[in-house]
Image (cartoon, rainbow, N blue to C red; front, side, top):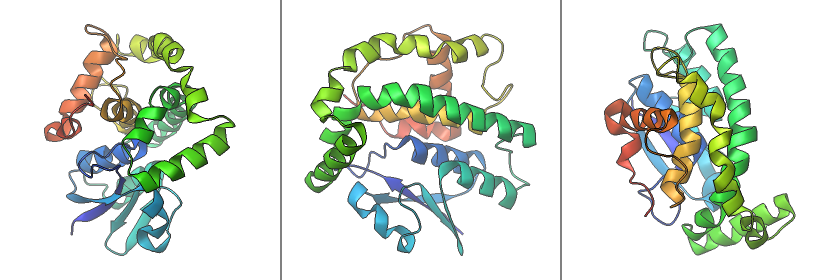
Length: 230
């Protein structure tokens, strides 16, 4: 049975962009599970699976409905233990939680500023209104005021990748000899901006760039199935 992945899109339904939905998509592909993306815009998320979650991703696997990218990964690991592991054991799962915390507190904090206006601009009008209201209430500033920090965040972003860059000098993947869910966590963050923004954050020849390109090629080029923003 094909799993349904409820996935966030803007005005163009062919360009899913949520970092968390990309984590879930890569996890499903890693497990070799057939899945179908169900396109959802911001203002329709409350209707997904009868209001199962305030956010996406949400998956339906038969009678099972699971929300939250990390919980989706742990569900897939437990439900399909005979397929390639996403964590490599309990220690790997705990390590992935650390990677998630670092990614969301350090990388997302910068990327959310860098891509903020770009994300707004790719949404349908009704979603633009929701996005502006909700983000401005959360940040206490207008989108334009937040975006004033964009160039500074772009300039300083490479330094934030130092822990990853150093790690990749010793191993090809964050997960070690092969990719694990921890790789998809960081990949999702960078794919978020690749799909929504023209900002150039990765330099040729950098270990992080090489790793990201390998991630794009995984699972028959799933990441490359959505072209980078122009």
